[in-house]
Image (cartoon, rainbow, N blue to C red; front, side):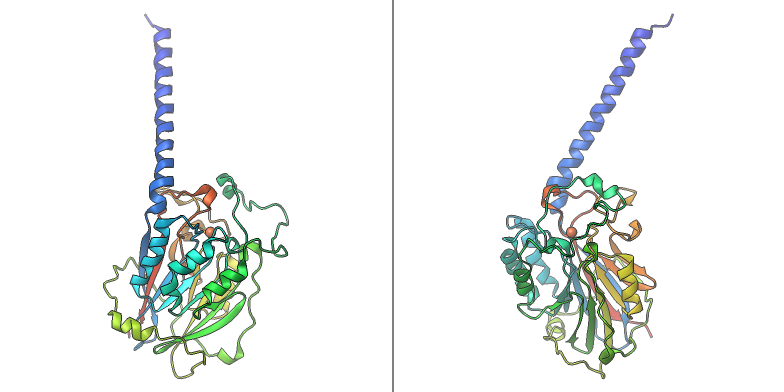
Length: 351
Ligand SMILES: [Fe+2]
């Protein structure tokens, strides 16, 4: 004879157990992402063979989206640690700070990097202080109100102070402009834009004086996951990192690099059409939200989710999108998405 009351009680117990397990898993994920993963700073390394034969290897350090607050001691320590990678060139794709008080702290933490050749593009969080956001808004096609743009709003963060700090030892400000710098045996021609997420990007006009065709092959294949054992000795790093020579050089190979905060497709296309051989961007925070086995859920721009973090290509040109070093301080967590900087080692193409 059946006993429906007992079966009903069993189903309720199972449902409660399931709900409890789900709540426990959610709580564990929250604790992990808020107090553990947010501090698991890592350096992602890749090799790219895009330099002309005979060119010396070049190490490029790329960091982005630090969203630094003055009390973030572990992030500050990691920023200091990056100098030990001895990059020949540093690329910063913005969203450096989360408060005005963060500027001197950032400048102090990256002071050794500021003394190396470098360049930067600004992000929206370099201009506007963060505020509380609902993470679910990222699932909207564009979470901003119709017609919203901050282009004509005055920044409420001291953008000039940040710019002064970043350029204090010669880093190039790539806000809608071009710049060049010389490494040993290589001229680097840079082009950058202001933050496309705020529609502040105005691609600079072609530079006729630097109109020479790129030396390195378009569409070189990235060799992701290198372990970094190919690093050159520190002595070579010091030699290669000689302060930039501003004068364009016709007698050395050129490398064209595009730099932007937010990797919107229109900007990536413009870089490719401009002859870029390598593109750097940030903004995506590795997808803002990631799920194990699924990857990025959103990119907060029109970049495909599969390219939300790491080295890929855009129309055949290597594209490195930094997963970023931080998060909005009001939603300061990362899940399946450790904070990262990237070390790209550029090597000569094989003959
Ligand atoms: Fe950011």
